[in-house]
Length: 186
Image (cartoon, rainbow, N blue to C red; front, top):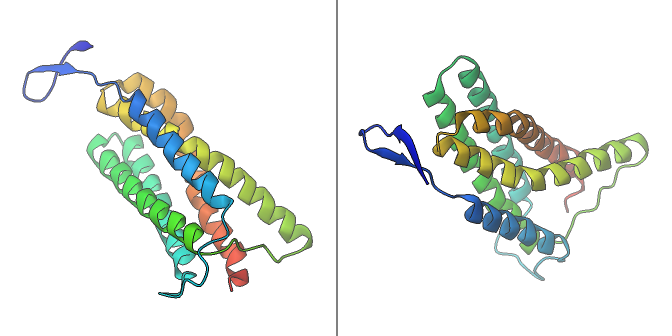
């Protein structure tokens, strides 16, 4: 589909259909994480202490959160270029998070939460909302960036109004989940 707009070199801009790749990536990522959640980890893995991986997850989520805040501030100030750079940095951090998350859940058994009472309820509320919204953020973030790449600015703004707060919540609660469960890693 051609658009009447021109790119930076003056040539006609051609929109791309990112929908198939967004669907494929979403299904693969969410499916892989779903499968891993049912696994018990590799037996007798001792090449390194795998409990370092959740700490790395929390670090990557922290940077994702900070980069998203930077992206939000930049776009509110009208600085699209800085906004884009922060968003790309957030995607890099999220990708690194996914690598360490999948590695940990492949290599280690699931860690049960050991708290009780209010803290257990709080932990499970945060965990469940984090998991549900983390699954939702995959297609939302990919669709947001695809609309930006296609210069569909109004459609990008519409979905980004949902994507940004959800992605901020997911990255923040990822750190919170780590803080709450880290005392129970063996």
